[in-house]
Length: 195
Figure 1 (tube, one colour):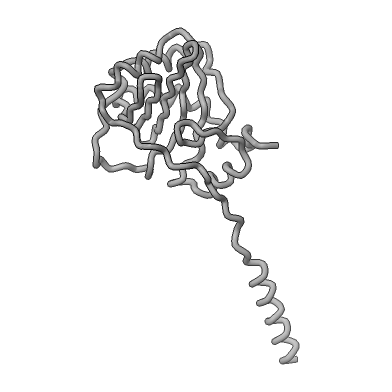
Figure 2 (cartoon, one colour):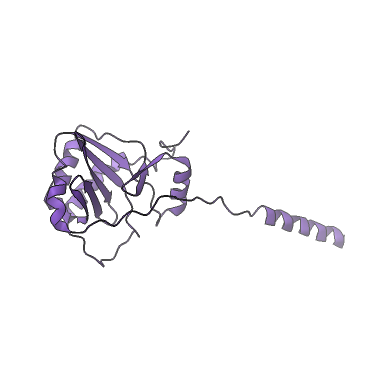
């Protein structure tokens, strides 16, 4: 009887050890983004690429590596993504509605929507994580606005250069309700799946 119990315990221990294999590792081979200028004097020339004419599309960013690292890893394995200025976003572009496109353009083309980046200010979200990329195309010229609503930071990239700055308090109030309807990655079934 004692031998039988000892044998069962050893069998359970062996099963337990064999069943505890480490999870598959996700390797994010995304190269680190390059440093972006914080010279706020560059803002006017970058805003020239955000006008009412041309095409506007949105790309949703992946889950935060700071707050949701497992979900981000899962999305990197299962969703089609693209690299935008060193940051991963879902590959599926979304066209803003006829009402939202002009509102986004109005907000993001105004110099009042931005403020200089204050170095050393505390951040609540780790490193910059793109929640949305709004892309403005005029002919062959593209201006991209990468937004992190959580920390209020923004990266602007255009033909005239790049800028890392903050959203103004007013634009930080206006943008979330406009962008929230375009969040698709957290609604249960993944619309970005590689299937």
